Image (cartoon, rainbow, N blue to C red; front, side, top):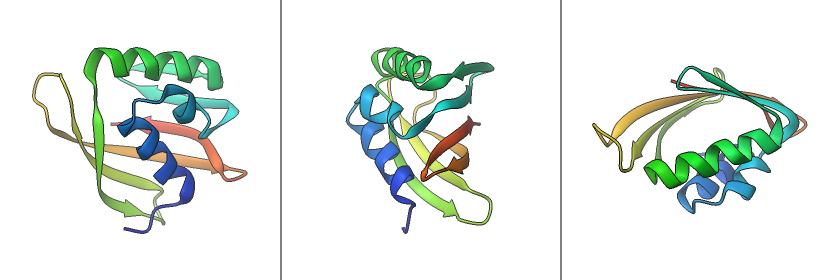
Length: 104
């Protein structure tokens, strides 16, 4: 699967539970929408993903990427009820980094 470098980096950071590397995939003013909550800016994103990693130990397996829609469908496995589940990541990019991410 041919993923944009920043998306491949995000998947790698998630699968290595590296919250700093994960946050570095975003611009300073990025926004993440997940589980009904909004996380603003790289520092807040880093703290959010660090907490999520500790709680769920989730890993991502890319299933399908759409360059037109900027979406990545993944199989997410972890220590949460119903694991594994299929989730879709909706991206907006700026300057080669992620500007916004909505996880559904």
